[in-house]
Amino acid sequence: MSVTYSAIKWNHNKRVYDAVIVTGVVVYLALFGLISWLTRPAIEAISPEVLAIRALGTCAFLMLHVTLCLGPLARLDRRLLPLVYNRRHLGVATFLMGLAHAVVATGFYHGFGRLNPLVSLLVSNTNYGSLTAFPFEMLGIAALAILFVMAATSHDFWQKNLGPSVWKGMHMLAYPAYALLVWHVALGGLQSERSIVYPAIAALGVSIVVILHLVVGLRERNKDQGTPGTLVSDGSQWIDVGSVDEIVDCRAKVVCLAGHERIAVFRYDGLISAVTNVCAHQRGPLGEGRIVDGCITCPWHGWEYRPDTGVSPPPFNERIATYRVKVSDGRILVDPSPLPPGTPVEPARSEEYSHA
Amino acid sequence: MTRSHRRWHLWLYTAIGPLAAMGLVLGLWSRPTVEPVQPSARAEVPLQTNSVEAKP
Image (cartoon, rainbow over all chains, first blue to last red; front, side):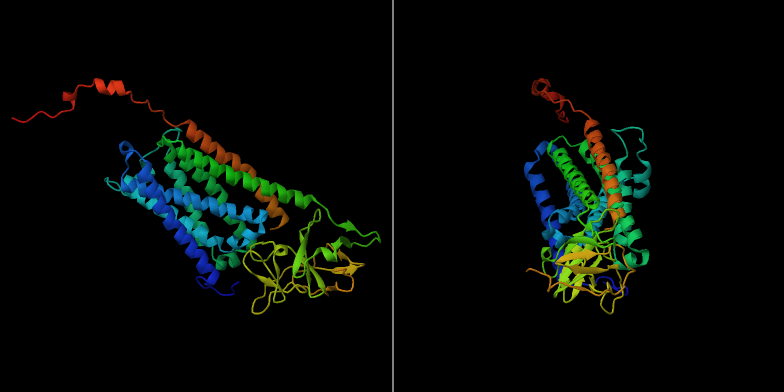
């Protein structure tokens, strides 16, 4: 969380995360060079520059796969949630690797003529009507431009100024960028590659990204259509969302009511409170977090809110919607109409009704 | 994520997935074919063809 601009608020977790990224990149580049050198026959020997272009390009492509897969994987297994915590650093590192690939490739293929390398890059191939000779570099440039915008605006400063919806929408451009890069690879590097290994790896990567996102997306849609709560028969708008005993202490039950946003019902210190499941920061799933030091803590980036007011503790002032809640005969009843963000709601007492 | 955000995500995946897969298939399909070199043909080339004549 940040209220003023600062480059990066470093902490131990971020340092470890970044150290893993740097180590991973170095190990990948070394292994790529070593394996290429050992496995490629002498007749197909390539120059060190081409080897560097391939190593940097495949590394950036692989990192983009990992970045895109972290979200749905964390939806499938919450133990992977810590990997989402600093995903933005992985995205920025991906852009830097892509940029290094572009710089070396442009210098190598366009740096020895009369034209400026960038001009040469843009005008040397105009076969836009051909699939075989398509200027695939343009696809890479477009993807790199998108990744640049995303890397440049990845800081909370931009997120706060643009607003969560605009910021998140803008960062969804990662998916068109991914499609552009698949085309860039397919019409570029794979055209001259005779081995089946590279196409097979590329096909596997695309399959994983696409299937994983579709499976998780459909699962979430089905959840949204479900209505586990039942309307209380006394004519009021209270909805029975389950038993007190279903919720572990300091955890939440996420309630999906048809036509409504998801609601996170927390149990803590013998009390029950209900807030929206949507974090004010990046729309993280609050109900998958837990209560730490009396505050609901978002599992994505650790933003905190008081469960009874939906307000962040000082000096922060973020607010989320709260819901009226009560307990009757051990059953939790929630009014599905959200109250304005930051509205205090008296928590329901759970202990006297709990069978635990 | 909000409900509308999740719905928008799913639409995006549904569109991007086939687009990316199509790029891969077209790229592989359009790869230029290379005729394999016949070892016997190479052996028929006279050695002196590639040799450099000694300067007097």
